[in-house]
Image (cartoon, rainbow, N blue to C red; front, side, top):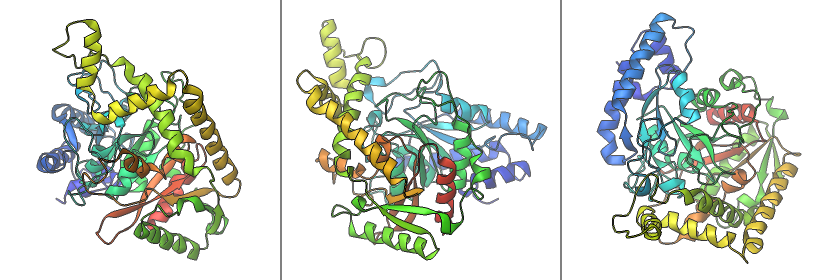
Length: 481
């Protein structure tokens, strides 16, 4: 039997329906892969082997009973970012302050996967509370890039990206607030999507920045992303930001939704090809763009003129929301409680000081500062105004194009420690992903080449709000070419 961990979801589905292998065998293959490789990559924080095998057995029974009418994800193993809670399974957000926390309910997106018959392999490592761009900020150890273990896998959804890239899972869930799916997808050479804000329920995703957080997916090809998105998307009354609109069959539309090449308008924002981009990344992207032009696609130069203020606006807004959201972790109701506290004030102070890592503390401090009296108007209010300008930039740009193409990150993956001593330099790693997040638009990262060190380079495609059908279809076409 071939290595089952190398198959696509569609190939796994075909094998299950044809009885070439069972869901239990498929699950065992991935569990064995995790046992073999996780000590090297540290991508999983906890493996739910007993649950996975129970779900795999149930999937086998469903397929045996009615193989042609079971959901496409029946029996398919998936990995879940630790940010997304699952009833009865420890969920820590890779933070010491939540060590031992057992949630009493399950994230809606995960619940939908389970209802579709998916097999939950476990919870993946991440930057603490999704705050980071490298995978270096987990309280439970760094996550390593399977392409080269001396290099970061990106963040914050580091473990979910590595799980897919290393063959530990064919599909994984992550969260993307300012690039936390797209950037690690780029760094590890796989596909990662951040859907439109409101397309997927955020219920059960531990909040970092509520106006920006979005659950998305990693896979090794665009069709597998399309399958996963169909099952996790949709309205959820438990999330007030969830939009009550139709969820298309993304896989069914992936080959037919792509317009005739001569009618497709691709926008190239001049602000994304600046002096800050690595020359090799720029060259690979330009070569890919020229390849698209040779196919007859219309390339349109556009301007997203407020791109340069997007990082400042993002870190003002995200940190302000983080300071508010993380105020609930106080050592009183659940999670880490300091053993040296002598009174209630010290419980708050010492529990938070001991429980949070440096990057989380930095962002809480920044958030409280921009929200404080005398600085609210000077920083937070201006950040919101800047966000409005960025949204208007995209609205104007989409009058002239259908899809926007940009780099995912200014560089390829960097070595551990290269940017950890310079928070500002680390934050600039998100320069090309945060504008899309601020505007609430869907964005996808697809591999488009490698640098001279053999490290992957990703290309980002950005679409109009709720245009995932066209976005996925275009990404699939570009990836094939």
